[in-house]
Length: 509
Image (cartoon, rainbow, N blue to C red; front, side):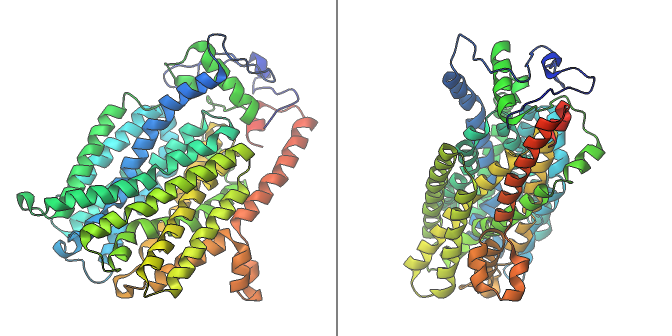
């Protein structure tokens, strides 16, 4: 997103005269970045060394944060194998599914305001507090004695976790150039894949505590994993990253260089822009925001269908509870490997669309196998690999692709929160797609997953599956978003070249 022309701020100053202030709650005018100037690395370091330092300070702690949060979100699936449903008398009907879906009510409602509040409170404070609260509530899940207690715990768990994913993506996106982000986005996002893998191993080990202190194994899964998360929340207060302009571990020259290189690549971040309700609503005038949310929605149906129900699906293949937990590990591990491979290629080629499109083909293939093969558990188990490998690879590419096409703090915080909150509405579909009455074939759940992956990702496949009357309603958001970006980039370059624009006007193009 290179800039040309004479950009001026609201007071008529050119960007070269615009000062940026780094104080506790706002940006200060200490680090000066000139619009149109070339980013020059400080003489005492190199760009690669500085990038490595950023990686060490930013990525590992956010990855562990997301791993722990996702683990506490989905470990109810592992707990269900160890008599949770029997103890709370929710073995029939849809009570178990309702306990899953209530998590997403506050999760969806509060993502956008939480992302805006994070900017005010500083990420290291806000995210560490959210992680601590998540751990405490996760522990309380293990102490609940009734179905209503489980519902209450799941609701507050969703409230605690609502800003983890969009907040972390927001922070990462403010540190790196677009060509540097995808492998980092994918590594961060697929910490959830590692959570799925570790969750199975931990559940297999913790499950052996069955009967200790009179508690069944499912209670110990919640208590032990939740306690570790709460402890991490306290420790991470001192280690989680803030935005570049707030980083105390960088020198003034290093902060200025990081801002300058991001300015060349993405444009002004407008960190000191005051947020008003009309500004938030203005963001939604860009139809790409809506398209991106729908694009993510289709993948969420599959990821949560798998995360919450794969242990039960694998259990239906006649494995013991411990074997079920162990067999849940390899698909998640394979998903992490493929996601990182596609992310590396995507960054190297500086291209997103085809990699996202390819990744969505895998779950379509996996679902097709699961719907047609019923008496060969090795083939069925292999199809689960395809489902999670493709979905876990596509989701971070979709989020990263969208994030790096959002200019400025406001558009990025609101846009990302909207994409993830709207996308997570897909969880309401996923948790009611796999009902106990459909076991062991789960035809309804697999059919719904296949439909959404086709509808929101692969129009070429869907075109063969639907009648001509329905094709017009099945236009893919993935292809539409790619076209929208290409079209508006052309328009943006023309507008920049044709007029003198303020920094805020450029950031909103």
